Image 1 (cartoon, rainbow, N blue to C red):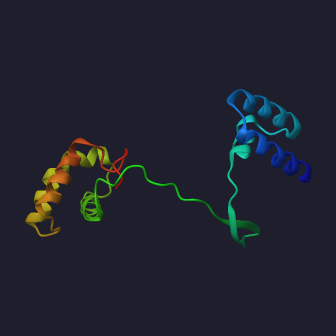
Image 2 (cartoon, one colour):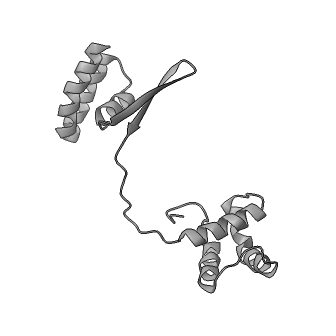
Amino acid sequence: MRYKKAVTSELKKRYNKSTKKQKGAILDEFTAITGYNRSYASWILKAKKQKIIGYMTSKGKKIKFVVGEKKKRNKPRIYGHDVCLALKRIWVVFDFICSKRLAPFMAEAVEKLEKHKEINISYPLTILISYLIFYPVFGGNYNL
C-alpha cells in the first residue's frame, strides 16, 4: 500500500503538468504498476489535495472529514429566495409532482392560491413564476 501511495504521489506531479498525449502514457504506466482501473487511476491522479479537518468512527467504519475549495458561480442567480419559496409552496400544494407536470398548472395555481390567501405574491413575482411555465422549474441552469 505504501508503494502505491509513493508511486501515486510521484506520478501525480508529472501527470498534472503534462500534455494530453503524455497523460495517456503516464496512465498506461500507472495502471500497469498499480493494477488500478484506467478511469479510477485518472481520477486519483487528477484529485486535488484536501484539508482534513477530522475523523469519526461510525458503525466500525472510519469517516474522514475534508474541506475543499468552493467552486465560484459564473452566472448570477436569476430567481431570488422569494421566488423559490413561492415555488416550493405551489409544489407542496400539488403534492410534490415533477416539474414537467407542475409547469402547465403554474399560472392557475398562482391565481387560486392568491384567491384563497394561501400565498402572497407581489406582481413582479407573478411575472417570474408565469415565466417558469415555459422553462423547467427545478432543472437546467436556472439556479433556484
